[in-house]
Length: 249
Image 1 (cartoon, rainbow, N blue to C red):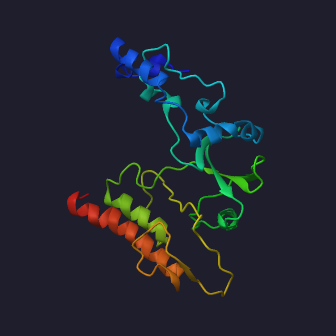
Image 2: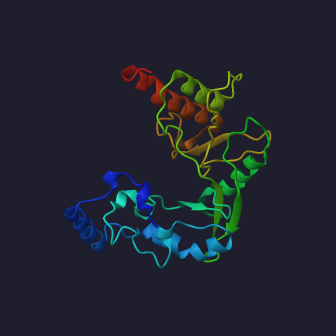
Image 3: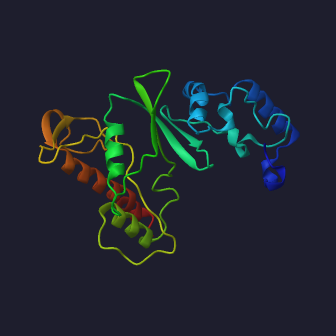
């Protein structure tokens, strides 16, 4: 339910715009995507595990802006989830979490749980809150994690913010405390590999987050650790070096 008293004046539409939004809604502009319909079908099971999706994913959902002159942009249930395998939810305490649906044959759950088990202040890997099977398909499971925002949202404005980000990613000697304490996390281990102590870190494969890693190959083994360092350095270069050339801090 929308609280009209908390909305700014520009959240309310003219009669003409209201009618246009009614027509757009009836034409399916705000309908659930195929991905969202999959998540709606999981709602009952997620509720049993203590996780609730937004009202948009209820079987009885009706757009909250219909019958009002409120712009759908100011209604939470107009927001679509654009990712196939990840969705936002709330746990039983009302805390926001992210739920990811994964194939069991993937190493991602094992790797994420292992990294969660490493209790160290320098561990910046996102923690796993819960893992449970998909009752509709035993080949899949759900993994629950804290809901986080992208590291560059909001955009960096001060040199100190950039330095703090780099410090946490590399865990250099701690600097003085910033006005607001922030912690950055490594997430998404779907393309990761876990190596036994002393085992070779050579891998093959040309799929990765960073398409510019030069040694990537389907046939020639390369060092996975060095590829990770290159990818992280590329983040620093693109986000700060290139940006600062045209938008100095």
